Length: 481
Ligand code: NAD
Image (cartoon, rainbow, N blue to C red; front, side, top):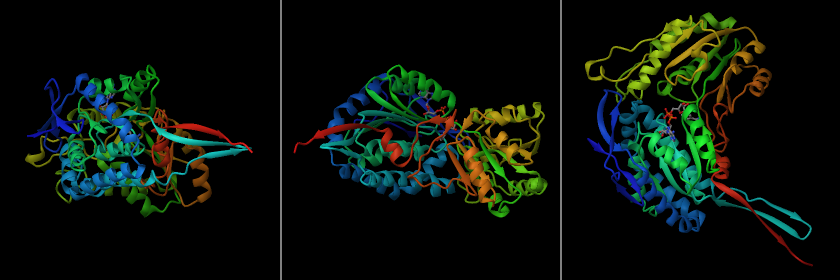
């Protein structure tokens, strides 16, 4: 049994009231670890540590802060397999994915922000005899709250820009997947990151997450998670006028036209539908296919899905690992039941697969495709966040853009067409923070990342993240002839 600890003031520590949560291995439903269910007392210790470290951390040279991040990145890279294994045990995702995507991207986040911070241009304005110089200063102690689907990837995506800009951080990973952030604490200790600069607290959202948002010493919250949680956080944070960055749910449309590059599209679509068991906020969960290729597409898509291997995350052949928790699996099953009630037809999947005994107590769901649902049905409106996609037919651009925008979400959209004029026109009309044309999940970390509508507000990525974690100050100097 693994014992996970908090990381407070540079040390691993038990929760003050010795309360723990069970941590499950989704691949077989067993308990493999326990993690602290921290309380306000633990948070107070972390905030005190951060407060006392802030001025020395903020006054380090920027390159010195970056060097700490680079050192930690080296250590994660050295232990890449250990981190990848931890991520798969904790989350249920295929080891091949943790090893090729989650952990390499976590390392890249640290290295990217460590280097970017020194490349940012500073603003200044010159009027007659007056220079206004804009200095960006860290906020102080900030909070980051992250979800379970890409645990270390999204954890580092937040803490790296916060730390490199000179803030101290109280980070709360998801209580469902605390393991790799715990391993990360050990890397911070080995890298001799000054105590209090980063504190990692494990607990449920309603306990420590809420306390972090309420704490008046914490100046900003960077949140990634569900829209319902995000709304609660935004309301709570407004009481202390905190700055908030909200990255929330999605119900992303995929628009597939007759003239698309068919091979590229279908290869990519399998990933945009089912990678990480569909548990990616950017997954394309509403698929719209133009009439001319609809029937062919349907047959080919289902054939490809039938080739996907579901099961043991550590088998190199596995394409689909486990769903993160029993509760989440139940939610997915419930949505597929709604689909039938709402008049949909399940044309692939729609059930729990039968696996070997060793994995029969794990939480798995077959990649599922449902067609014939009204656009206003729950399946086309609610975020399911699992391996379930809906399929609809469309005739022309006007019809499909109405369908695509018929959602309260606005995170990402995917367009497959070889017609560059149409691609540009629709990319402008679709209501989302991010549009992929003829690709999916390509990311340049300098670009703004984030949704609109119920998918969030504020942007992460590149200088947008550094802007969020700093406040501009105008230093205005007059000189005399
Ligand atoms: P969640 O909202 O349940 O939890 C996210 C985090 O918030 C967890 O650490 C949780 O403990 C904490 N939390 C829960 N209640 C809280 C409260 N009242 N106050 C403070 N913190 C609280 O989300 P989840 O189930 O962990 O993740 C899945 C969701 O995340 C999906 O909706 C998905 O779309 C979204 N997501 C969005 C992005 C993005 O960039 N937009 C990326 C990944 C995941």
